[in-house]
Image 1: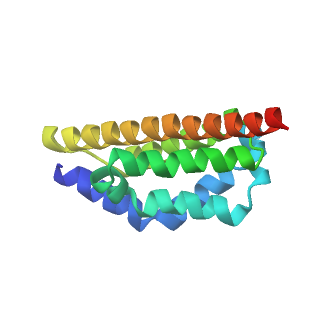
Image 2: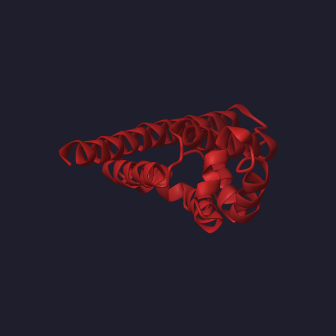
Length: 154
């Protein structure tokens, strides 16, 4: 991974608390994800910090199976909490946009190599968040189907 991408990831992790707080202030009260008010605030903040604090681990070390497990579980949890999928989707997308905006602000690329590193990091982030959305949807659907099947059997 190019040096600039590594520095940007480290910078994101270093500013995890600030990024999490900013996201909470801007996003969690937005009407597009108002259903997230059903989730305890400390859980939302912890989840956001987890992404930002452990970004390098998620991008470089976690396997597809680990990503699938974490986000399938999260999707099922949000279904159980009564969060509309569209609100959940909007929150994950907003998290992705927030970290991309931070990279745009902080990640000045002075030459072609650094620009390449920045672009590679953005591509990795897109891949991570796209997969996260897929597995979250899968978990959400599986839980909805499981609950529906239980009600049908009664």
